[in-house]
Image: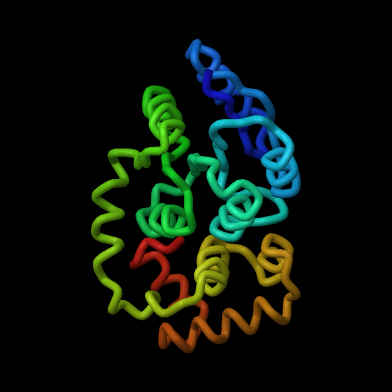
Amino acid sequence: MIKILVADDHPIVRNGINQILSTVVSFTVVDEAISAVEVLDKCRRSDIDVLLLDLSMPGAQGVDLIKRIHRVRPSLPILILSMHASGQIATEAIKAGAAGYITKDSEPEILIAGIQKVATGQRFIEPSLAEKIVFTMVPDQLPHAILSQRERQVLRLFASGKRVQDIAEALSLSEKTVSTHKTRLMRKLSVKNNADLIRYAVEYDLT
């Protein structure tokens, strides 16, 4: 029996996931989490084999959350279930320690296959993302290759329409710190204004 913790802050999404997983006799959802704090707490206390994790959880985001989970449960397979069909984001998640990555518009069979595979210690990437990841990992000479993980997070959130205040809240940072990260990443990318910054993020699939 594969024991699963489902971590997503949207009730409708969790209910849908639970319905899909209930069709597999070898799966059992032992718990749910709706925030980063709950994810970390339940990873410490719960007997689970796989964590099914949304990247955008209240309290911590993306790579930071994956790294925190690894400090709590180093050997726990993490399968990312995300709304972002981006090779760049998937690559960052895998490099941070996720065992697999699939998108929320995948067919149920993909989700089931992903859980089964990571539970056995293997990796799983949604097939439609595999090509994107291959090409994402090649151009290390591009300007954004020198951005820090935090700068990438700020860039992604800003390009998605978030204000400095929103980003500060999402990343648990001060507004001054977010503004500093933004200034530094704009300098590294050689962009002069917000429009150019958003254009760059869209061009290189960093949104």
